Image 1 (cartoon, rainbow, N blue to C red):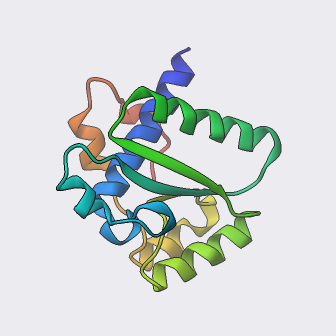
Image 2 (image 1 turned 90 degrees about the horizontal axis):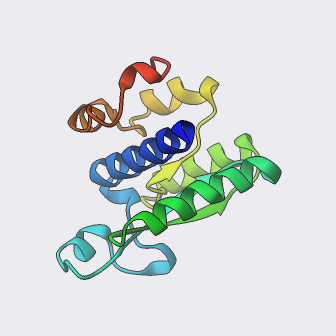
Length: 144
């Protein structure tokens, strides 16, 4: 149960942080209005894209986390989209970022973190986690 709470809190923090920090990646899925436009209308749900790699049991777990997050509140809806393996995913994210249509949240293979960070494609979420320090303990995560 503790791991599920940590996973849900982590996903929530990441999604909130990426949504707040990446205006270009927070568009509504399927060509709808931007997150900023939706946020101006308090009754409008914000829909964000989450791209991930791999399938099978890993995909089931990721879909479960997204479903749990979506059911936990009614302000943000996450649309999870499988993008193949990590090489496929990274190429698609880089292309989408260059085109100004990156997903709000994506998986990232650890060896590629430096490349994405140096390209300005990542948002430091520490300040968001610190706002929820009573619920989210940074010491529970590996640095970096």
